[in-house]
Length: 500
Image (cartoon, rainbow, N blue to C red; front, side):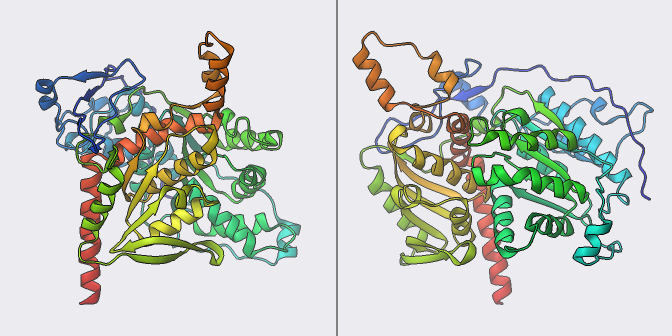
């Protein structure tokens, strides 16, 4: 058995929380590039003048000063320095200027991830993490029913939750990338995971307990399951999650997940939530919940000015010209994309990895995550024309747009779009129940009635809008687009090598 020294770390909080800064470089012309979202709700943000902005131009994520976190962050009490794990890799990336200096909340989260990493290394054999180890013999269905018994992992998982842009996905990915390549592990977005589950349920339809079979297939592929953006909005998902994860945990699955919501707040206000509550108990039993309490949205610290978020009277015409420039000499034609279970998605125009859609075609029709994931398996760039201001009248479209942005972000795809307002403006009429109660009443019953007619009170959507605004900001940042360009270039080079 592989055993490593288990540590008890006493980390000093080496960072003081600081107010972050935003650069004021909005362009006045119409149509304009929406470069930054400067109307930030949080008073901790301030707008810099032009002279100050030059100082911070290349501050976030790349070309940052090479200040490393305290050495205490990688030492254990007996003086031995750790040689591997997410905490060590985090310090290395900060020292090399690959990441902006983290706050104490991120360091605390990395302590939890390092603890989990150490436990997994210590119990790797018991957890059967090595995919090259001898697999247990599978018995027939009846025999396994007679002899089956729960076989929970000796290691508990981790459920990371916190506000938008606090680095949850980055920290989980950093942890995942440090795990040995021969381990049975899988990292997947929660939307994609549930699509796979429903597809497998369809495949095993008619069996007495198809969820048990699905859980068996998932556990055969991965023992360590990392789910990004755990968010339950669909009643079909809510009703099967408890039984699914009870089967998964009994087969030794270890869950690491990120979410914007605390476990007790999952599926809040959802249909038949009483049937979902046992899952929350199961989740808390098999995972340690850890909150990332940072108030900094690191996505909004990226430098703008290079995105394709267009606002203005002629933004639609400008978008079409930009789309034509991106496809070069290619001729855009209607296309079809295959999604799950034989369904196909019609693409109005597509060429050279770029797809064009009017907003209504992609978000006003009964489409979902499966369609969007299918779209980005074939296209790396989406031109989306005519994003409206969201309210009660187009609430369903707002839900789909939130899902679409999640899928774009997960696939690291590029978004060109024309909209009726900034990302903040798009969601101003979407509020949670608590936000609606805090709104000041109008002086007349008529104006109050008009307000209520425009306002969309939706807890799930009101909670998700901050994530969408944050991601729209990052998707249009210079850093994100540079990363996309490099990935696209590498893809073309790999394709040329295959063709040669």
